[in-house]
Image (cartoon, rainbow, N blue to C red; front, top):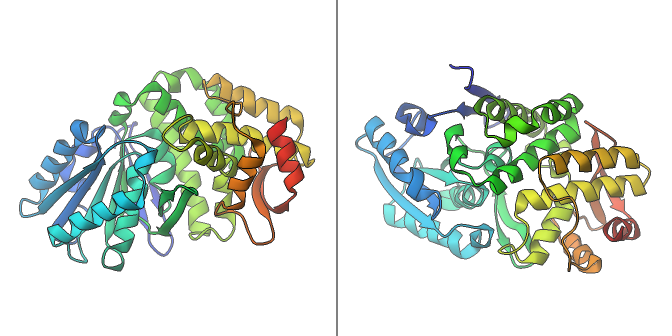
Length: 364
């Protein structure tokens, strides 16, 4: 294994391995290492499929010539993560005659990983899914941990299931075709891990900011591996988000409300919304006396160094965002629940956060 290759093992009731490194999409033996049956479906989008789908299919056929393979491609974008497109994946599985030992290969970013993973959770009550993330955001977040879902007009990820993958194979060379905006969006989620559990990682990110933004292979591989190690440790302890796993949603309650209010297809992408959401969460923590305003400002400054947005989009109404948050999955019958900050490397889940404090953070 080269210095650019990393492996992270996710333990627990459904263990799997995360493979990180260059050229992995061409490794048919790796792609089929967990394959149990004779049916495979490659799900991708219109941006990613022209770049990588043929390569993945060729690698699969070279490793297992008898494999029956189908491809399903949807339009790109968060607005496509719908029940309608989910049903399209199910139809393809039915037409393929996919049996219970079939496998879905989710080739793309978080939208594809979430939707294809949800289809895998539902077809015949659950078939194997191998995540092939091609965006940094998906490599460090959505492909790991087994949360799958689709969006509804009322909110993000409201319909879904927990369905751990059989493997995650992150080919870092795919990041070279990622638009700079999407790379920065992924770095927002990377920064999140430093913010909630690893203050030293925050310092490492600050020191390697220029290298990460310049697509340095070694720096990106290291950042992905460290992020996945943190997420793996948290999901092992709490696979169904009853406790610590909720920490991974730092900034996401605000972010999901922003995304939903903007209608998904316009405005911030997910990583950009998370960046703003983390600033708002840190500001809310300061309002509630859990963190200093100086530490919140330092987090804001770091996000700005990575050329990420830190201010709420113009035109959004705080009361409308609050209404979205009441429908968020992290809300409870007793009130709003937030992941609040205690300074670098420390966060906690707080229930029954006063709505007046949330509005104060939004309006400030």
